[in-house]
Length: 201
Image (cartoon, rainbow, N blue to C red; front, side, top):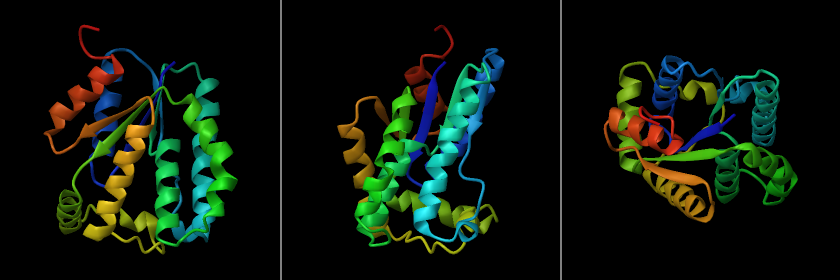
């Protein structure tokens, strides 16, 4: 019963690829559960520490639901691997105290332990900003879900974040980095190849 996490840069196409993967699995007759992001706005949680805590608890609850469901796949959108990178990023920006990660590492490690395949979705900071501008112009920007967080989406911060993701991916066995500058179908096929669920498996 594989557990798959898609994580990485904002606007790299994670949601699009999760939807394509769901469609593919359904056509193959494979059942699945999707663990989406925490279904709360940041402003409803009250603090960044609590946001991280509730996010990882949400992931762990989804895994328990999956175990009891007899479904074939669990697909996680920004799971425990992403949570570790983002906690480090928030510490770098002085949004969190360095000791906060120590209080969360047991749950993060537990979550990473049940992920069979982690796909790290990467785009350049410039492309992330360009896509954000395009989404905002079409009324599709979803940053409202983090209302009150005041995220830093500047090129400098996104460059640091991308480098952090790459460094993390190189250190962790089982993480595959995916260049998401390619077209949607090419990325989808790369994901299927990595998951060994493509046609002709």
